[in-house]
Length: 119
Image (cartoon, rainbow, N blue to C red; front, side, top):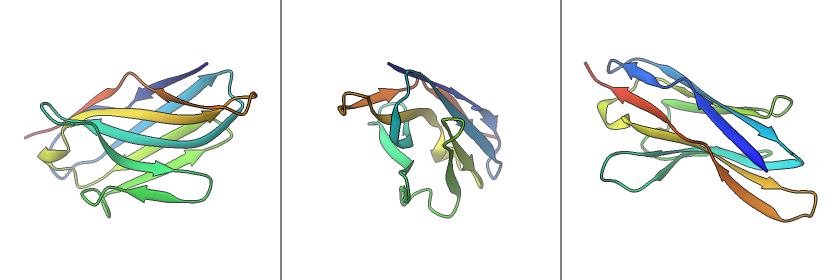
């Protein structure tokens, strides 16, 4: 079992920055991928950014503004968000794809952290 805890959300003015962090803990064997998703009120959850062992990918709406990074030694993933816009307002969720020692892969989600961009 893997637990994910996000931090770093809050209220920021348009054009501002926030840095989200997600810490994975528990019986960690091999984390294959980590990523950030977001869900705004009345909308479906959508991918923001994800990182595997060698690649990153971003939603078109955040390219050039957000940067995902991963610290494998600490089992953490970060999301640096710059030039924030009101449409970035959402609950941001951390997701982890974990391969257990039985070789099966499992998906885990964090509880979410609120990001509000407003003047």
